[in-house]
Length: 334
Image 1 (cartoon, rainbow, N blue to C red):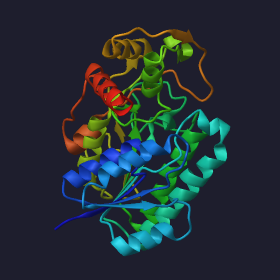
Image 2: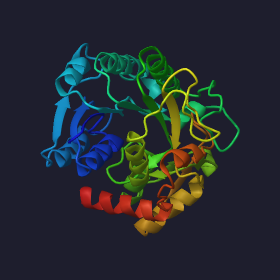
Image 3: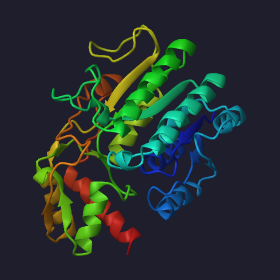
Image 4: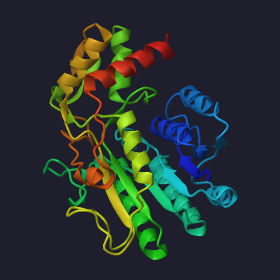
């Protein structure tokens, strides 16, 4: 039987790739996106256009926070799987426009949880972020680490989302898996992310801003690897009282867990830039900058729980991933 999935943020970078994978696997996909103008709406529209080539995809343009909209959608389509990826993204933008994070990330997620309570899916999967680890200095980050000191309002809203989902999982028996993503990159990526900004600037012969004088380390995760992790976790809903291995983040009082999805191999920012220069075949002009407010010097995912749940994961090399992005960028913006 064909399964139905609701994917919020389906015109976004990660959401469009997840929707494509589900369609390829035979799902019927309802894709909801508000098409907000945080970045180029045309790029979002083109992502949706690619999905609409499949008969199994239905696009809905609406805001998460619109009262009753999500509940009506779930009542109509009764999705077995809900993958909540819609959010106001960006660490730095959350300093400039915090109210948009309250509306999309807090109120919008509340609306989704209420809709899931009224029309329960077999599995609710929700995006969080590695930014919730905040000021933690222990590396690599493990899901069972304390996450009490977020460094940005964006991270704070995502930590709140985890707590909100846990309360609904406990109160209503709603199986919920939270993903903590680590610096995702690849084709169809967001224009506000470093890879997109660096490639665009270097192609234009303009300097790139290198924060913290390049002394940053990030656990760069290629989009296809991330999507593979999400797809496998769809079929592993948490069960209360059934932990996996000795380091499971499964709640003792709810069918709820949080899972890191990363490459488990942090890379120096300088090496990242070198991979971009190699893929482009031209050097970057570097404008060295201080650390920006809300940022952290390093991220590193402990992916032991992910492996315990779904098996060994693919790991695309940074060079291969950057080359794939550059090839897409040159085709798309030729």
